[in-house]
Amino acid sequence: MDITPNQIRTIMEAYPRDERFALAILQDMQRTFQYIPRSGLMALAEYLGRPEASLYAMATFYKALSLKPKGKHIIKCCDGTACHIRGSLTIVDGVKRLLGLAPGETSEDGLFSLETVNCMGACALAPVVVVDDVYHSKVTLDKLKAILEECVEEDEG
Image (cartoon, rainbow, N blue to C red; front, side, top):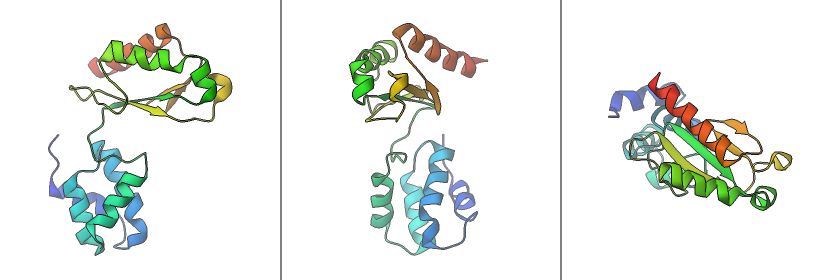
């Protein structure tokens, strides 16, 4: 996806030219482009009159923001204590086998990204996997495969 200066400007101009809105603008860039492009950071620094380094620090501080392109479908595997004990590593290994992804990677086709999370606060449902902000409880390898197949079918249909 080619990102144009006009797309970036449209996102920024939806907010007042005030540094209090920097995080909201970065979040909108993330939502729109699946990451925050360097050109977006540079344009936002100019728009707000802030050093690019301060926006870079903000973008790298928050785990929900990324400077690298992410997949259309974000897979988050919980590896908190309860999930770990109930087999979260098996689920992460399953994603590796099915999609060829390690945590922190995005598939070459841009369809999937895999992340591990320390705890999702849903310990009674362990192991938990969140795909596209939808929580899946007591995930098994078969359930994981069905979830991923559903994502692929959704994109094809």
